[in-house]
Amino acid sequence: MLVLAHVSDLHFDGGRRNVKRAGRVMKYLNGLPGRVDAVLVTGDIADRGRPDEYQQARAILDTDIPVLCLPGNHDDRSEYRTHFLNEEGSGPINRAHMIGDAIVAMCDSSVPGRPGGLLADETITWLRAVLDDAPPAAPILIAAHHPPQKLFTPIVDRILLDDTDPLEEIIRSDSRIVGMFCGHAHTSAVTTFAGVPLVVAPSVSSVLGPEWEGDGRSHDPVVDYDAPPAIAFHVIDDDHRLTTHFRSIAKTNSAHGFRRSAQPTLPT
Ligand SMILES: [Fe+2]
Ligand SMILES: [Fe+2]
Image (cartoon, rainbow, N blue to C red; front, side):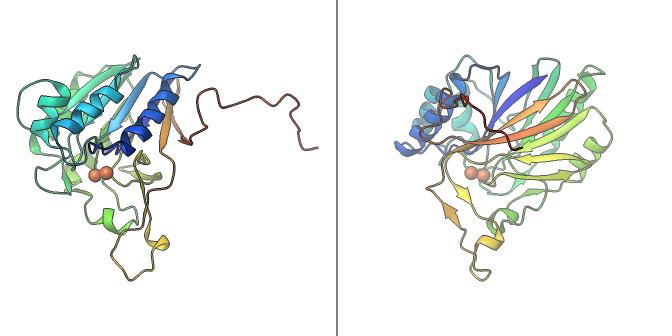
């Protein structure tokens, strides 16, 4: 069994608010008495892609748990490389990781200068190579910032992943692929894509409301900055089935905040 903590859209902006929220999440994860195999961060790590924002991210995401990251539309590839990864290069930042017996393919769906997403030809070629190289019995998880599926959140539905056919063809032709994980939407959402579960993590920084939480006329997003930061936990069991739990990290919700009831009361 594999457990992945899915953290998204931290939007470090140089200020204290989002540092505190992300710090609360990492303190919670670091303090869990149980096992988390990796932390998945699906983009919008920085808010404007500035060096100081990546310095904040590096400090807060410094943990003994393996941290798997990819960029979002608020990230800047060049600054992300230089100040977050400490490396050189150009083009999409794609990474494949082996966590336990699973392969996690972290795909860069960002498009420099645009809020919407796209898997570049280079990324599609890379993903096919990852699958070719993956062990025949390995469960495979695909992650990208932009969801490939409409979510009924007006502002997000205009800036989803574009040209999804190649990704759909890849997923439909490989039965090892267990599911897909995304961020970007700032809301917990579950749907399907290409016949597998598509799970969108909540944001650490804010909540974006779906269309029925707005007035139906305005295109202004419904944003809740007061909601506590939230994350998802993905469990991949020995049958390669995905189960997801969502967790809000309230101020009092430390790893030690859960208490067993001394006298559990059961309905009779
Ligand atoms: Fe975001
Ligand atoms: Fe985004």
